[in-house]
Length: 390
Image: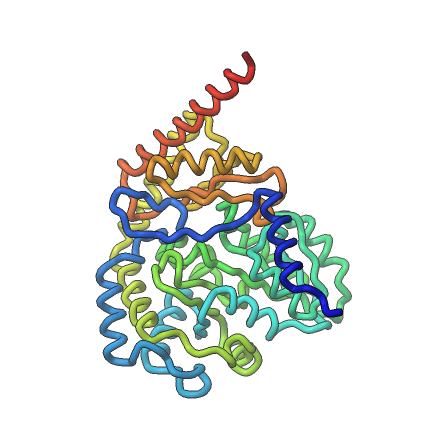
């Protein structure tokens, strides 16, 4: 008798419900009174009218869809222009567009790795990097978070004749802290390995020109493989890989998620070109964002909120308990503020947190609203504890 698939689905759903980890989608409606402090629109560009107009013009000129993969007929002049602009932003000879950041990471790791590669990556890397390692066939190990000594110990164990690939996020999406990219680059160089940085949350935010935690500061010699996304600070969608000619040509030939996927819609590419122009011409957006981050951290510290160590727009409040995290998120939702309630399996057990994200679209009044709502969470919790103690 064949297995009952519906029974399997019901059991899986029941187990997740019983663990109080059932995820639900919410329809996000535009509401001027509701604060989005859960997304990754760090520069406030996703709703910028200039991007919408650029996308509309791109649709009129190139159509709404690319019609085919880049290697067939999908690669148009607007894609070429965007790749050249991203190469300039990051100080690399070339860049290559992918439809999503997840696909970029899977494609790069699959194209570079086989059973002869030893892949070493940070324990807190994004799921796409972890999945890429699983699918690549490489011998994969994960070093302790940001622990260069642990990485060095693992690198010392790799046979001399083997290729080494070290991978790290530039900014870690759930903690908001930054990798020691310089230290990783030096350690990789000493062991004859390549370094790959996924700078999804750094592009547009960090760096002197918004070029990220790597960008122009470190070249292809130090960081041969640089991945970035367009759907966060740049406000559009898609991703890219930047590097030298040999890397990009290799990916064009061997990265299956690139070869067998329809190219990025041309209107998205056109909107991203506009976004890059705004990034270059309006540095005050980043300065404003930095000011909001500093103010929030200062005021949150005075409230003794359990902030994690982050100087980026990702400001996690570590609450530990899953139900406590859901309760605080619900109180914030009632106040018209949406934040991420992050629980296992996305983070380890006992590490549930509110993932607050700040944006250049926010202002001081928004920070006041957030702090007031967080104070309400504290007061409600104190009142509940006092009632229980009686």
